View 1: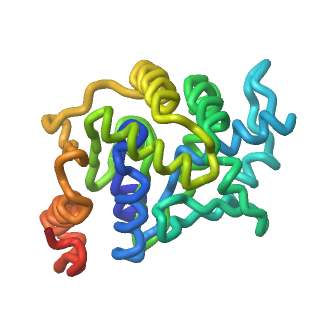
View 2 (view 1 turned 30 degrees about the vertical axis):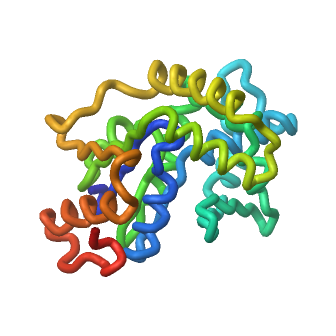
Length: 238
């Protein structure tokens, strides 16, 4: 916990279900949620628009920092993140595969990751925070109350990503998505992860074999064991 505000971290590779689980937990608990990957996507968007340059010391300006803090995100009924900044809907552009590819590259720059740490930690507020992304437990919130690592078979994750991209208007083929996912996984594993296991207190959940309700039920059980909640929401009981 940071300042006695309970934090749940949800880590995992793309397509493992982080966003869907985080959004449902936040809605059911009434907690805040941090979609950390959108920060890198927004920086990639700014880079394309010539308002953020990745040269020199990769400095994030004060105005850009303010924009990141003012991003307002929610998940719609389809499970996709809607992202607004000053009433401008950036959802479509931020969900594009080209932005995602550039965001993954930006995430590999240590100076950028360092600057985003303080911004991400400013999202901690009562009654609690659910932080999803990569390195949430290991780096951003190492004192989180409950740390989750989601994983799934590669084929399952590719299918999820394919459906998401096409819902958001991206005309892609399944083999293209598989190739892009493989490359991104390799970057993410080399840039962000050390091996996480249960000996570190991390709860490992295979979302290719567990239903969303079963995943949530396991997380609620952990919260109950920590004394944070007494009763699980009915919808989360597997």
